[in-house]
Image (cartoon, rainbow, N blue to C red; front, side, top):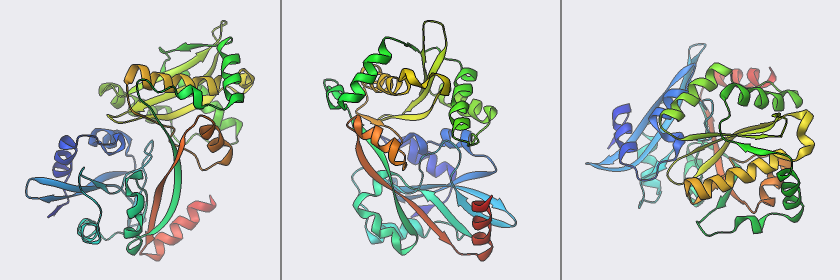
Length: 311
């Protein structure tokens, strides 16, 4: 039986032993803007089977699904021990509303069963990078030789700041976008709201690389759940990039995940940009697929997407 209510989904999440952080109701409450999140969950009596959270927006009289800020993926998720089947996919999909359009990133969980959803959506593979960790795993041995040399160089120039305030983080984060001619896709107020929710649930750590003069070279924002830590946001001061602090700080975040958090997985949150992907792979990370799923039922939705793509 599918249930399209937030309380049923909240119960699903409360019972789930290893829920990704992006699926948590409190996380979604903090990141949705210009709409609201909803969810469908599938149950066999009191036994949870699967769920599907989504972010619904309304514009020009249209209701459609998009991705909220700070959210890598949403989409269908299975209860541990179950496997996707055509019948299970149909049962979960049938509980979703008939909206004008759908554009959402799924988790890596779909894996080999992704083709089941091609009946309902256009699927586009995307990739992120993950580094398996264990308490005794020497992940540094898998780093490219040149990368290790750059990290050693930065080790002489910067030190780790674990008391970085949010305003300083945002300033450096913004500089990275400005250097590329891009606009930061969130405001400081939006980041504050996100940060407050993560702090309340003790799921974040801000990191900075500072030199002896107190200058902030690079920043990173790490979040986590019970299974993985995510290299969520980052940035470098363009004037100080030659120090190699960005790579150095990434290594510090991995070490923090292994030694402090003791989690089995570090998720770089990936990038489809070849240059960024190469850096991840030089750390020994594995490329893992997830999917962007889309459909457009209404011509007005297709027009809206085309208009937004041009602006």
